[in-house]
Amino acid sequence: MNRLFLVRPSTEYEQQVMAYKDEMLQNGDSFDGCAGLDEVGSYTDWMDFENRLKKKGWVPSAVFLAVRAEDNKVVGVIDYRRPLTPFLLQYGGNIGYSILPSERKKGYATEMLALLLPICKEYGEEKVLLTCNKANQASKRAIIKNGGVLENEVCGEHGVIERYWIKL
Image 1 (spheres, helix red, strand yellow):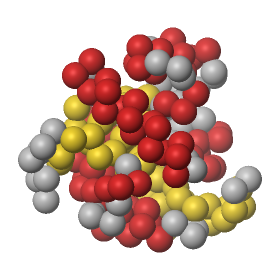
Image 2 (cartoon, helix red, strand yellow):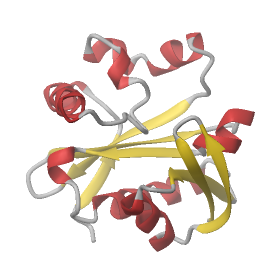
Image 3 (cartoon, rainbow, N blue to C red):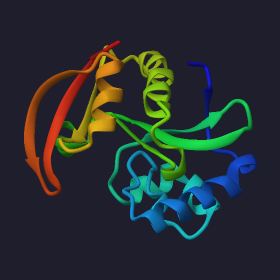
Image 4 (cartoon, rainbow, N blue to C red):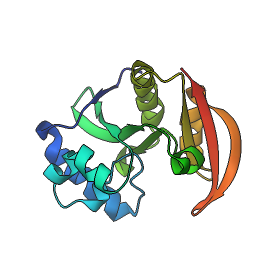
C-alpha cells in the first residue's frame, strides 16, 4: 500500500483529469465517483462542484483524485456523497469511484477506498454505504477488502445492485 495519495482537484491536475475523461469515454466506461466529469466541457466547469451539482439536484460531494506517488499520475477519482438521498440509499451509496482503464487490475480501487474511509469518519460518519453492480467483481473485491458487509441486492436500471456497509 501507500502507492497512492488523495488530493482535491486543482489546476495542477487539469490536463490529467481531462485525459482521464477522454480515456474513459473512449473505453465506454461509466464515470462513477467522477462528479459529472462526463457532462462538462472544461475542467473549470467540472471543478465548480457545489454550484453544478446543486443545480442538478445532487447532494454535495467531496471529490478526490487518487494520485500515484511515484510519478504523480492520476489513476482514479473517488467521491464521498452526503447525505444519502432515497436514490443514493437504494442504488448509489455514499462513495463512488472509478479507475483509469489503463491502470486497472493493480489494486488501486482497494487502496483509494482505504484512503477515503478515514476522511468519511472525519465528516462524522459511523458507517458508509457502497454499492456495485453484481457483475463488477473488481469493485466487489475492493469493498469487501475494506470491510464491506453485504446487506442485500436490489434490482436497478442497470441490473442487480449489491449494497454493502462499511463500519468506520
